[in-house]
Length: 390
Image (cartoon, rainbow, N blue to C red; front, side, top):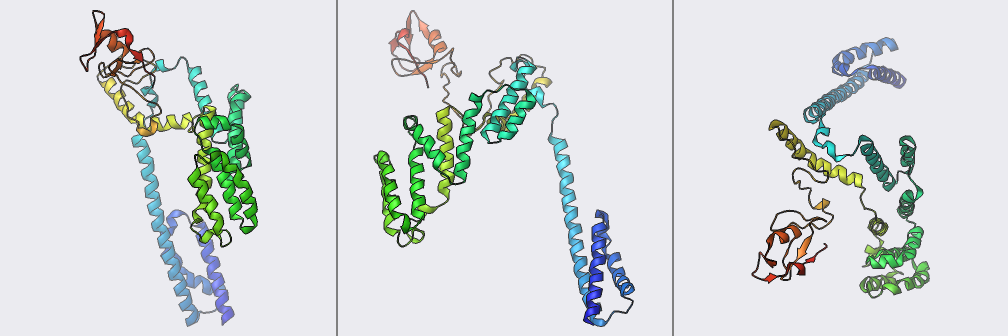
């Protein structure tokens, strides 16, 4: 009896698998036909009638198969519906004339435009550590990139890869060689690297206690700035015999320190080398996603009202677009008199009384060789104003 049940069960499974593998999507809804025929086919294969026990087992199996197939059919309907909505949303929101929001006068030539875009993509690839892809782009685009451009990115990626593998050697070597310039930036990178190395020794247990004490000498140059942190690390030695994992100093073993050191190294190294932490391409892309809808609306209004000459400058947009605090990279001063943003040709000028206006506003307020501050009654010589650099 057991062998008969097993043979029937294997035959049923084989038949079901063959049906399942060959079914197209629409045949998921023909489950009843398959299930009603399954008993007859099994009987034909075995050549013997099914017993009551085997019939009950087959009925239960078929019921489970039917429920599973119906669930698959229902999920397929939901997925198909979602995919069809994606296509409709793309057709409804995508505008093929996006290039129309950019003035032709922005670029000197199409060759210049293409070269600028290729260099932005290349710098992004180098900064993200995709060195092989960047080299392939150089060859296919025939860009002439010298080694001086590549070298900073190659070095930074080499050190970051070592940090991701919890190897502090390359980063410490780099920080020591650039110690003076890092101090000028008020950077704590070298101290954090030494602290992490000290913590690694602590994690080694009591066997590493003498080595950790010896390594603590590296903290001496930073004692006046990081005194509190050094005291915490030295206090952890008391619990080394009992295990730091169950001590008040267990936070020293947190893996978040490795993510923090990677961020600190990237920020300070880019600042030291004159590079941006985020690639210009990613910043431009994020800014464009915010600004593009506004520019598309302006383009539609300009076309509807047949406006011309509204956007005629290369270095400014026709309207002001708010990109958020994330995209603020430097201070901006707008003249309170003329309501214009200052520039190199129209810099901010500080008057004797302490108020600041633009140079163009100062020239317009001169009367008879004297200048009266628009905010207070103090009269002064216009030549006494001093330019301010933010």
